[in-house]
Length: 293
Length: 295
Image 1 (cartoon, rainbow over the protein chains, first blue to last red):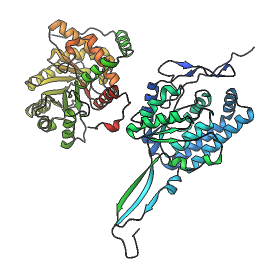
Image 2 (cartoon, rainbow over the protein chains, first blue to last red; image 1 turned 180 degrees about the horizontal axis):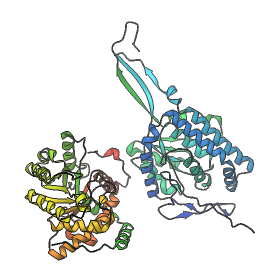
Image 3 (tube, chains in turn purple, cyan; image 1 turned 180 degrees about the vertical axis):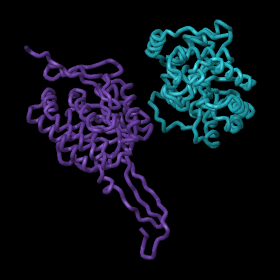
Image 4 (tube, rainbow over the protein chains, first blue to last red; image 1 turned 30 degrees about the vertical axis):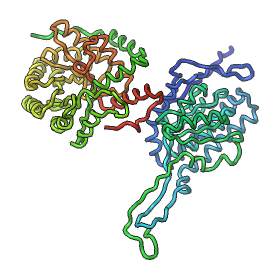
């Protein structure tokens, strides 16, 4: 007897849960005339809820030890490895060849492993002990910026998403991501990977929907501290920069048109979303031969 | 005379609350509701770690909720432990904001009548405008309703001109029927307000429990002509929920209860969420806690 086909319900990911959009709306992206599924058309209220979740998660995620965050990121890669067949299949559904799909999934896994290794090391290369003329031990160290709005690339479903959010969360930031509108499948499945990887609920929130509708809210929300725009539309970028002024959001733009390139794997991606804190620590005296530390 | 309370229709209560939570209030009505809710807050600090400085800070917050937004109302009252009443009184001088004090061995209420009366007297003498007492839940559960009634009546007498709010601690009462019974006893004994919770027990205030108490107030009003106020307290921290409470009051008791003489919220973090929503309505931008004073 033929089995009835079980189709997957693609939902959004907010605060570690998989709700449908509060608006009840959906859209149906197509590949070669064939529907990819009914995808949630997230509203500004979904975004607002996601920011609340991200803010709540910021405390525990940024306070986790760097070593622990590294382990959790590594765990994401492990989970992705275990489910690679599903991702390959979804990529093919969205128009990739098998070879291209496999390349994308492997690249995504490797990129997560790469940044997992940096979690407890990036602060060594970006921090400094500063020479000062008073009797202070003066040092500068990076801290996560806070909640980050991310607009993931439109043309790739998985590798662009991973390349965007993994360095953002590596330092302890939390984020709300708007994923590719025409290729949303892998992002939703990636949420399931995150959900089984000890990433605290709310550290990464994933929304599907129309960019036009959500962009201005993502850029203007006062409780969002930074914005990562990983698409090529200069008009959109300008709009984001204008709206981000109100609370001085840090706006960063990545060109991921050659997302597989080696140059997209470096710790400066982590540095883009940290704030440098300088501490003046009084010491007893500076000896004749220089400072005492 | 024994107090006969009617049985509560649990399914009906839950159903009405469910319908209330599906309403949406928007634009001008929302702004109006938010301001009204702000004006009904008893800004509360009831921590073991409270200090005079914290109470002074809270009094400041009560008078200057968010000066960047012109035309805001103040909160209704500041609610503190009895030993901070005089500090609060001094720091609220010249404003219309009342000082409420919890008394009667708050929050457990496990002490002798003498101690509870002294506790109340101390707060009243220090200038408290309102007293929030707790009922003896242990006695209530043992069926000693007369004891509970007498105690409330005695405290009411000790209050003098101060208005008395009676905390039922619904989270410890268990059923809607018991909540109804306790509400009826408190009102018959002279409560000016009935209040859900101390905020120290979970669950604290919920919409269904509040509706049960509002129904009791309504019946009491029809039977005696005496108006009694309502104060849900604890766990009400966002604006949407506050608006739902206002809807319940409006639809159960009518507009006469929609002011801070007859309805209050016991809350601390609610004020900032209301403010954030007001500013959102004004500017169109979702707000951050970073831009609102904590206490």
